[in-house]
Structures are given as structure tokens and as C-alpha cells.
Image (cartoon, rainbow, N blue to C red; front, side, top):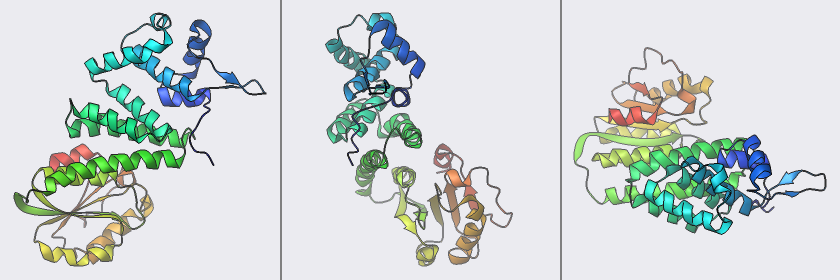
Length: 299
């Protein structure tokens, strides 16, 4: 199956650009900004060129250009004006759009160029929170609405992971400077969503702590011997899809039985599966963070 999309519905354009389908139709009818083709049953569909043009028009529109003015700009000049504006404004939204185009076309070079342009003016932390996090949120919605295939999500997620790992590797060249505690980062058995945990590892190392990164899908019995390494350990995990919400309390009890029977070490947990959860009073060594920024403030 060819997973590089060549034809897009107007709903796809809405999902990818953030411009309502009704507005797109008005722009198309009144200003001739897009030129859709039609199926044999008279249903509009749009090509990649239409999508790229709409994303550029959206960048100008969000920068304060009136749509009537945009309509008068020769089509071949629009990308140059967009580049000029975004280079002055360091537009996060345009960078997100560029990365979406990179995703749709599996274009690694476009992703890298967009990322490197961002790094010229922003810290890696700013790129992560201002571009990568909104991009991943958008991708989740695009996947749910069948605008993209799982392969698109995997492609971008892998590139983002690479960037986190590269920045973390730079920190690993310096020995830990804060020996007050040791962090152990892991994901539960069958949990594979790793980006949040990877980024937390970066922030932990940035602060000079010793970090032991164990990664995806680790059974609890794989943690049992680690507590012997340090008297003050903080285990960190992300529950994105696993364990199911109803099984989280029993998982936490099992953690203390396998890893920390005396409750002397801490467990920090984040993720969708622990939102709105109420911890038992006997789990005093376990702390839930509803947002990553709260965990970062605790470091």
C-alpha cells in the first residue's frame, strides 16, 4: 500500500492547517486560492501542492495578512514571502506546518532543515515545548481522524527521539555533579511511548543527576536489584497506554512489593493513565504528576 498521501479531502486540509473547511471553501470560491480536482461522483480532492499552498497561506494569514491581499500575490512568490516573515518572527506555527509536510512526504531533510533553523534562535528546551509538543499533540488528532497513517506518526516520533538522544548524549560526556539522588527511568511492560520519558531523562541529566535509563516495556522484576546501588533513588515512569487505568493501583502496590517493600525509595509517575487517579494512603512514596512541567519543578 502506498502510504504517501497524494490526495486529500477538505477535512484533511482542515485538520492539517487548522483552517475550517467552510473558510477554505470561501477562499477557494471567492479568491481562487486552491484548485481542487473532482472524483467521478463530483467530490473535491486536493493534491500535495494544494496542501503546501494552503499551509503557506495560513502562515501569512496568521501573520496578519488579509486574505484579499494574499490572493493578489503571485503563487510562485508566496513561499518566499513566508520564509522572509517566519525568519523575522521565528514562527513556531510555521515550523510545525513544515514538519507536518515533512511527515506527509516522509521528507527527513525538510524535518532536519526546519529543526536546525529553529536551533539557530532557540534552545533545545524551547524547541521541544514550543514545537515538538504541539506537533505531537496535532499528530495524535490527525491519527485519530484518519488523516495520517501510523507510519507517519512513527516517522516523526523517531526523528524527535533522535534529537532528544543526541542532546542527552552531549550531557553524558560529563560526570554527574549532583549526587544527592539517583534517577531510574523505565516504562511498564508493553508500554512503548517513550518520548516523554526520554525528554525527562534529558532534563534530569541537565541538572547534573546520575540517571539510569532502562527504556521501554520493562517488567517490574527487572527493577528488583537496582535499589542496592543507592540509598536515595527516584524511579520515574510514564503510563501513556499501560497499565489500564483500573489496574494502576494494583501495579503501584506490586511496585512496592517487588522494588521498594519498605517505601524508602520514590516513584514518580506521569501520563494519561494516571490523570485523576487517587492514591491509597499507604503509597506515600509514590507521587503523581499531571503535567511534565510539575515534574521538572520538582527536580
